[in-house]
Image 1: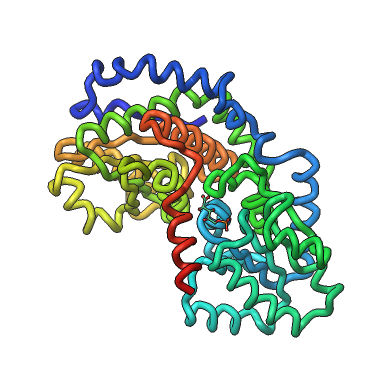
Image 2: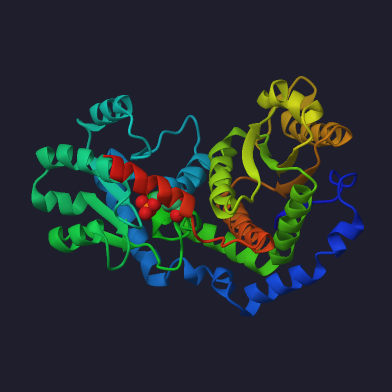
Length: 399
Ligand code: PA5
């Protein structure tokens, strides 16, 4: 189970009366989750069925058997969750087969030239992921990879190597699947990109990486069972601090493996809550590195930031002289929180025991619930992203 410390390092900043004034709102949000219009988020069945899970696992095995590189094409919610989980569980000295390459999240010529050059003489499988099927960046990347693959493979070989994750019925990618007979997976209708890591969007690439996807779902179930109240409380703390002028939240970590997890968090909260002139601007810090740069601002700079820290209790054991680094890193975390509290920056700490599938699933579901609850507290729609759609429209009309 996750362990929360919402008290120790927030105490100078949040009064008991601040919290108690949210009681009615919290009750209403909880009811909406338990029996109202948010109840779909309290079941992992919303993300994936047993049948799809089996299909993903057997497809992942086939991909692992035939490919050197697995190119995952998608942008925003269509790739950030998978990237977060895969890199959290990556071991530096144990290369993966197939190598997983995330592509289609830029329109940078050098990125294209280097990636295509790198994969061209390898055995390639590709998974293009786009709910709408019309987003420019992944569409371009898919065209480029397909141009290369069509030169290497016959039509029937392509059927073993091209995987499409998109809407069940509509969009150009679905039309392509219908025309060419490529293997496809469905992005559930009621789950938007940034909430899709536990659907086929995230689970296929994660399974190809050899990660135990059922364990992620078990972790999510755990959070549903045990952490709804804490998710609402965390959303409340963020809202109180926001109203006190703290409009920037730093997701702070002490383990580099969680770097892309903080990138995913930034997406989840920015896209969910940054609308109608509201929301908290998310940033991230990796310590100890950033204690020697951003740390100065967090301690003494403009009074606009609060931190959410993810701590890992039991990391690999390593001793230098008389110091156990695992314990030392935890002491650094709490000492920094103490120092920041003595300055301008309060912290909430979320502890996990280790970085594994179960804890990652639990964190993912905890943050889903709190992002949605936070959206409700702000009185905005947590499920749309009109600002993102705006740039997509403009870029197309300017082409
Ligand atoms: O969270 C979201 O909805 C977005 O980040 C989308 O995932 C992103 O814009 C990509 O959209 P699509 O999957 O339609 O290509």
